[in-house]
Every structure is written in C-alpha cells, then in structure tokens.
Length: 167
Length: 167
Image (cartoon, rainbow over all chains, first blue to last red; front, side, top):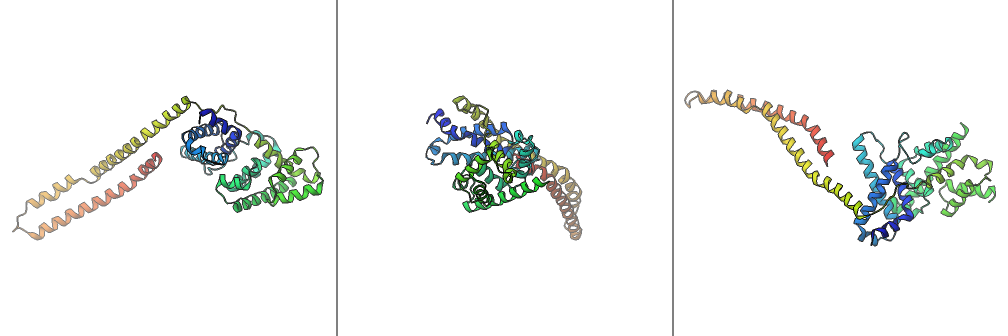
C-alpha cells in the first residue's frame, strides 16, 4: 500500500473522523492533530488495516481512543478538566460557530446537559447517521444499550425543548 | 408528507424507533419552508444537527515520508528520555531518602553516646548496667527509626506524584 492510497481510503470519511475528534477534544487544531496522528498510526499498522472489513468504524474507534488519550494528557497539564469526554460550556467547541445564534445555542446547552454516553450516541446517530450496528462497532456499546441511551436522550431533548419554548 | 404522517414519524423518533431513512425524511422536512406550526419548536434541533454535520477539516492532512520521519523523531525523543526520567526520579528519591536518613537518624550520635559508655565497662563491673545502657541505645534507635519513617512517608507523597506523571 502506498501512502497516497491510504489517504485516498480515509478521504471519504475524514470529516466524520474530524468531527468526532473535535467533539471529544473540543479544539479544532487538536482535533486536526488527532487526524494527522491517526494517519501515521494507520500507516504503521497498514498490514493490519488492509485486512479490516469496516475501515470507517475501525478508524472512528481509533479516533475516539486517541482523542480521549489526548484529552487525558491535557487534563494532566491543566488539572482543570473534570469531564474529559465532552466539551464544557465555556470550552472551545465544535459548536461555537453555531452557539452565537441564539436558538441553536439553546439546543447546544440542552445537549450539553445529556450524559456522555447519550451525547456519543446522539452524535453518531443524529449528526453522522450511523446505524445501530455501526455505532455499536465504534463505541463498544451493545445495540440494546444504544437504543436505551438514544431513547432517553431524545425524551430529555424533547422535554427540554418544550420547556424552554414556553419560557 | 402531511401533518399526521410527520406526527407519527416524530413520535417514532422520540421513542428511538425510526429507521435511518425515516430520520432522513424528518431532517428534510425540518430543512424545508413548509413546517407545520406544531412542529416549529423542533426545527432548531434538526437544523443544529445539520449544521454540526456540515463541519469539515480545514487543515491539509497528508502523509509523506517527511511527516513520518518528523513524527518518529519526536516520538523517539520521548521514548528515549522516558526511561532516563524514571531513573532520574528514582535516583533523586534515593538521594532524598538518604539525606533525610542522615539528618534524622544520626548513627554517629548513638555510637558516641552509648558505645563509648559500654566500652568503659568490664565483664565483672556490672552486667545490669550494660543491659541498661543497651536498652537505652535500642530505645534511642527505635525513636529515631520511627521519626525517620514518618518523615520519609510524608516526603514520599510528592515523589510518588512525580513518578505517576512521568509514567
């Protein structure tokens, strides 16, 4: 496998990888670093990579692990992040660009109130459009767990949207 | 799709029972300009997902022998220095512990005080007096050992933290 072949394989879903990394590390540049490091890591494991059937899911899982690892290191440096997995309200987030718009900012706030598992599932299903099976491969949750997390998340979202609509 | 069909789909959506195709239909509906008044409250949620899902990589992510060489150089520096850091920490700890022992646990003082006394005694002199001096010396040593142990325990906390960071 040549280097450009590997880049060619990743290209169709590189934005999904980026958004997932961005969702976890909460910083655009760091998310881009994760993707660059991911490419290098895959290149070093290219023999293993070639044999993988669902390359996209495999890359998403690797992205998730590398992003969490990066956030943990950041946690060591700053000693301030008490919730490593997802973005705090005041952190630089992939949602900042939409946060300034009041209505979408309101949704952002509601989503930030979900648990980490619910946010993961909502992101993979409602933003990226993955099937339950694919989400299971990426996240390691069972399909039944995913359905439960998603149902609870959507019920909460609906409740919060209706509540804030009346306020 | 008419209002009742969208109502049905929405209810399925909140219950996490929609298929990906049905969710696509809902997404398209909320992107349209023909949204029923009873559904307007949920427009922001679907537009939010759409907006987040359109974020993409802006940096040029590529793979070349130079990039890999650079990465390996950085990694090899870390890998090369990591064991050295461990040894340095271990040496620092040993030196620190030794210094504490020398300061807190002065063997010379005990030698001078008790061994000097003991050599002045002969066998016939007084066995009980020798025993008394030995008991005092052991008591002195015990007190010093306890004090040293306490000091080392207290001082070991920051060293342990440092070792954890290095690991």
